[in-house]
Length: 371
Image (cartoon, rainbow, N blue to C red; front, side):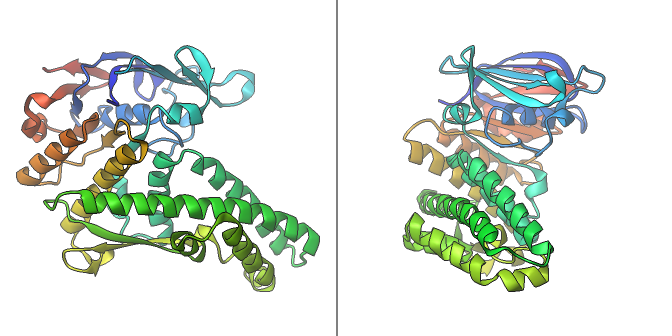
């Protein structure tokens, strides 16, 4: 199963040095606000693709007063040893990945460790902007398809170039064609990735039992994503995007930016029990719906890879649930068969886990095992 049996930190956030032996069970971290519980989840999130649970820059995660570098290392239940270090030599900040003692890449590491997380910042995603929902969904896509990060980076670079061209007020057609070709290539890849994960996620939603976390009907609002959902191939989506940008240059020039494309797409979520858009659901319904989507994503990853489920990182997820929903959440987590890391201010929040979890008390950069 996907589980950590050891976690070591050096100069990461408020931890000067920490070695945490684990027994493979779920990990429940409890303690006062500001003690460093979320920092531990963020450290684990560095073992996956992307910028981590807080989307922080690499230097921001270094301990105050340290030399500026940090290391997160872990041993997995299958004996793989993984590590991520911030290398600040040469005046730059670089993420260095090691797998079983040898240099590796973030993509190779992502094939071994897949991570899905839920944080309090996500609670308002349904009432937020389209960009909030897009970022939330792309994080799920990244867990399924690590190369999504590279496609997104290439798309953003090409879009910045196109926008810079538009702002000049005069567009050289040959130059614009070259930029838009690169933009369409990465845009088509993004759309196909999103559509593929959408199919997997909806299938996992249908497979989940009815219960305390309601099912959702989800869809993507965006021309490229809808084409990918219909089954259009890469070439067709590429050509559609390239034509869209070629014919919209004058309008985009007036606006000073690119008005259409995967960077404007949205995630539509329907609360199935009521048939209402998620944005119109109550705060409690939205929280339950969000947890259901995260559990469905973990289920989809397990089914998609025909292997172990991902690590689940749930920051303060249990705090606002009633006892019955907490117990239901813990039962579903255990049914997945992997390892979950959860945080809360009080130990009693995790009582329903019983002996299925390891409770750790966090206080001022120290972690103490309670059972």
